[in-house]
Length: 231
Ligand code: DU
Ligand code: SF4
Image (cartoon, rainbow, N blue to C red; front, side, top):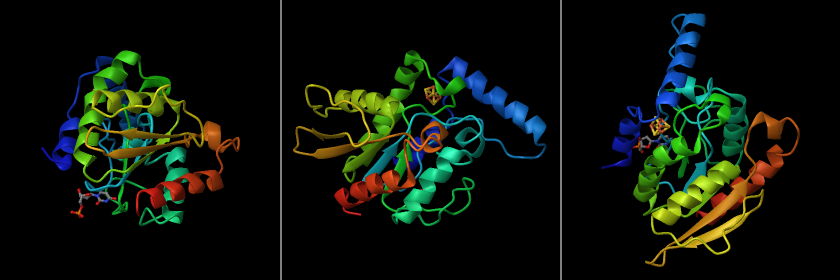
């Protein structure tokens, strides 16, 4: 299958009962509150071209962000910070991601997450993470011919991605690389392929409001990733 087919398929997934009812309840309540407004309320596919050499991996859709708009990091404060930085370093065609049909383009970059449905309190259960992991694994397999660098936003994505990549035949260094802002790990496969992982604090308001992650820090990681990916 193609990445476009995978993106289409994931939007129909109902494998996690708790997340299905949560994402739909949030959507119902909001639809009632804002009559007429479209509300996605389904799993969110990755966003960006199928020949990306750089991937960004977050955690999961936000209840009123990607769960509302259907595009990763779109419609919430985290996304404002992220897309602004992507535009500033030349990886996005516009500084704001408004909606899934606003025409924004990413250049050589794919944004995705280990969990595709908005979880209550931004906390998927370990079971939900494991149930969702085949979607990320398949996405990375399809990107494998071009993918060179991954920016991982936060420790949750770091752990989840390392598990998925290890199960897909990537050799993870021992001891297992620890997440941190500025963390880096190079994974290799049997065919001599290399994948560079760069850790970056998550763009959550908790980090950006407190200055733990500044726009400068984010731009620096994205610039390094862009250069390393040959973009
Ligand atoms: O065929 P194309 O217009 O170059 O787009 C390929 C594929 O990637 C299509 O599904 C649009 C999508 N894409 C993208 O190229 N850049 C983005 O920022 C978002 C989606
Ligand atoms: Fe399906 Fe993933 Fe959503 Fe669970 S979190 S219902 S596996 S898309």
